Length: 399
Image (cartoon, rainbow, N blue to C red; front, side):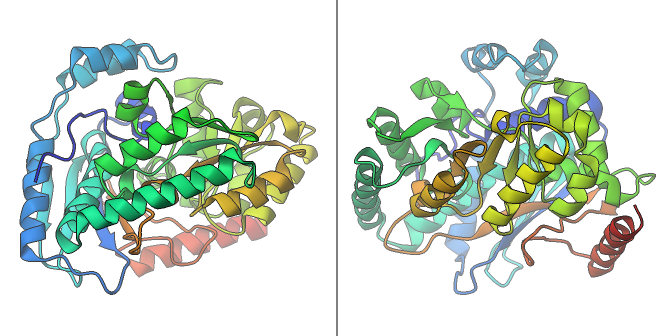
């Protein structure tokens, strides 16, 4: 199989956003990441595991080129000190443990500095996806169905059947293949839309290649590690610590806050006037999107901030039909944007993989996410999840 990840830019933009802040503020933090396949009927063969191992080793041989570093240097919120760090940085294969010791036949764990292990998540998932679909199915048939579905869905945007406003492609981690994602981005970028605008992709490599905007700010790992990786912190205040560190790094730049790491209701306790003013918008990733959006709008109004000046970014398991409904509902109430992943990058005649790599420990401590959708979290220690929930409950009841 040809090399899957061909550039260290081939990651999601929020890894760069978080990476810079980690480098400047948390370079000594250590994390453990664990892979999980949520599909119950999927099995990785020994041959697949061997190829995944080989592809990750190839990925670990890559370096940033001067051309790539120059591209990053021209992004207004990226600092020269971080670019210089990336000039020296390389992935370490020694940080990976890849075995067959899992129900699905594939176990992956990475351990090391947060600076390193954070960067492994997206390329690893992209490798696992592509190896699986190329080896488990007739790949050419999958690509044929992918092309057909892509053309149909683009037609529904160009003829105005669906109205999305601003939307981006977020599919790298669960894409069918590098070929499929590149085709989707090419086709979406050149189409003429009536009521939609394709604004970019989370894939920094393809954003550079096609002159698009690289999109992405923060992920759950940021709130989990900043808020729960320090032994002195009460984890119910994770969002405050995470927002404070983000503003310290970026000021008013690069500001889309993620609300659901330890429930949105707890997030809103900390998202008061200063942060609500500094951050340009909020991202939805679990729970009912209509309820969430209405709640965010009411929160802005209560702070006497005009919600029409703020962006609601929806990114949870979207397709064009769901995005269309959300856009029509919210377009006159706030700025609306969408990050659409699997539906764009892996829509074929067979189901996509539901695979994740999550932070499971930081500085020797368990960390956990308690989102607005039960079951989206991943923690090896149920006792820690109960402790975190008790901390959140106490805060919600007593503040």
